[in-house]
Length: 436
Image 1 (cartoon, rainbow, N blue to C red):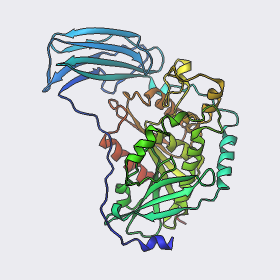
Image 2: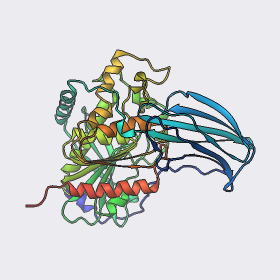
Image 3: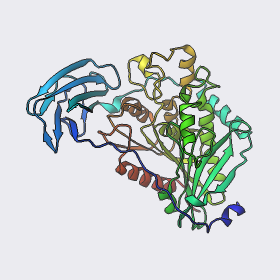
Image 4: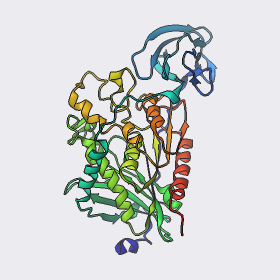
């Protein structure tokens, strides 16, 4: 660690972390439920007000096509309407069980297609996931973590001067995990001015393969941040095309690799690797191991929850729309979460897969959590559907809170990022043991 500190005065140009945003179009379809919170009780019939507008004015005479369906399930009603004054109301449909009902609307104006949706939630606090906890769940993961402890960590830190700023030093960091020669890489951001030991945040990745720019904002406020990848390659490669080549080549559909064997499934290496990333942070001289949290979105939301269970050093976890929740729900007539193993004709329903996913379903990890948890998600998300995410949230018995942004899909608004950051920084410090 002494060599690490010698670089503390090196400065360079920083990078910023961007979030996906909904695109803006000249013509917009508006779909709005008649309850401002989009929530209903079972048996109620929401009214979905529809408008097709441009320049904030309804377009008269436009034709729409609509579908009504349970969250991510096949539509039970389809229809077309001509909006004489550019507006209409769709009603007459409900749900008798807790869940979500989505109204999707499409139209075509001047040859261009436009689409929007709104989703009504019915008694969402009563949504129950379908997955079953294996009898040996704890034993399976305890053995996996214990086996990983026998692999030397062999940590490496390399300063990346061109990514540093006057306030943050940036490192390419890695450590060995799962088997000899297998490494987890990440982008480590460290405050230039370190006074004692710092709190730390692990950022776990969403699906895909890409560079990891690092989290500067929290580092500027005195937190060490470590944004990792899961595919065994450095996260700060100068040639960005390499990530795309891997994503479309050897890593295509990686989320299904080895899924017929619970010991050979791709995510076993990932789950124990993320848990070890916490140990890596705790091993740094300038990190307070009593103040470490974990956060991420989508696949990263799933990994936030699994990591919080697998490593007791985690003091809190914040998840955006976590994936891998209630993975097999579709075969029980309920909406399932990414990676949608059993919702496509190309995927084979097998006893082996059904057995494997019980050990990797985030719902089962959520049931075991003992630390504070923060969720944020939207009702319109059709990647990590709200049924699966809400089901996972409902089984958590540790302190929990959530920020629901009903209209959002599989993206986050700046306000969600700010809320997550504020919650995380407060709770990482709050959960630290009181000084004697």
